[in-house]
Length: 264
Image (cartoon, rainbow, N blue to C red; front, side, top):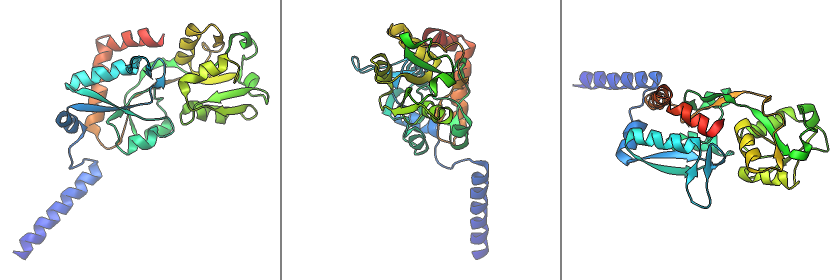
């Protein structure tokens, strides 16, 4: 009897070791949890036009990521439960499992890929770091060297890749932190700062909306990258499913139409 008990214990321990080595969890994965819950929890900052923006008038999320979120929810037959996050807390919230996925114009980069899982890319060849400035100053700012001067005030939102880019490339300019990303273009237009480090798609939107603003380097961005859907590591089945949805949307033209609608 004791020998059988020891043998059974060894088998259980061996199975647990195999599961740990292969990264397979004995617990239910996200697909099972979402189905049982009837909702998909989507983390978003809601401050990034035209990706994910919480419209204060309607109380609804708008942008390409809002539409992608709905398409993912529809594919699962569940409703969306939005979970508010911020750029400074995005990584910690993702790793803590506060939501199933995050969508808010999240750049794919090595740093995020090391600690979290990221989906296949969308918006490829569209995104890049650029600047937003006042229209009257467009000729003044034609390069990073023109921006990196002691008298130039560069306003950034904390916690994201825009902040990282500014600190990595601007050593002399004044870095001004402003917590409301969606409000920075107004701050620039009203002269409370000179430059906003942003993405090409965001800069293009604000130039269309406010004639006081310009994006003189939009067609020659400092960097190029794509966006991805962010999630906690450890559930390969869930990552595979999200990539499958993106592949289907790309194949039937839906993703191209959304990119044309929001990003070009």
